Image 1: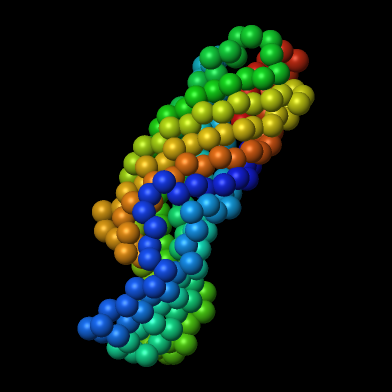
Image 2 (image 1 turned 180 degrees about the vertical axis):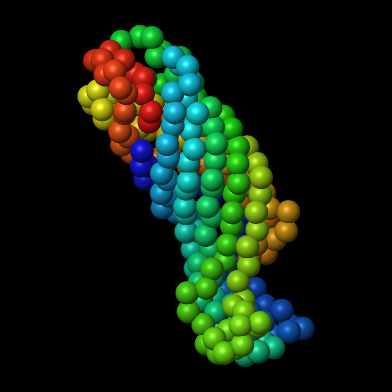
Length: 206
């Protein structure tokens, strides 16, 4: 399945302008409290009411510009977060022949955050790779909670409304902050596969 929606920030937010008088370095950020969220996922039917789901998400929190006072270089990029999660999803009404099927889920996984660089005038990064780009990344292993509902369109297609809580908290600061927890609200469509399709069956891989 594929879902599109909104990443709603529940954590900290970096200042729009940060300077270091010692090095002369400057951060300029345009980080949003609400951002576009994209998520793809696959779920496998374990039990009549239970699925195991693997998902990969992506959100661009906004732009970050960094001026290195020591080198005199400027890097322009984005602040990205990638949740990679494994969850158990339970459909409590799976035995009821209804097109509306609510679910709850819980699990965990890896939250990878990165300040990526798209443009730079740092020629050292091209001619002297040991200098590298002034990128930064952090990883957090944490849980997630989710809930939502499917609306069955046919034996093979369903609409999916989902809300997930993601308590992202990096051990070290990424763009000066650690707390990236968020709520995502998204809607999408999923393909239902089952070797034995029945009009009242909510089973299959999704």
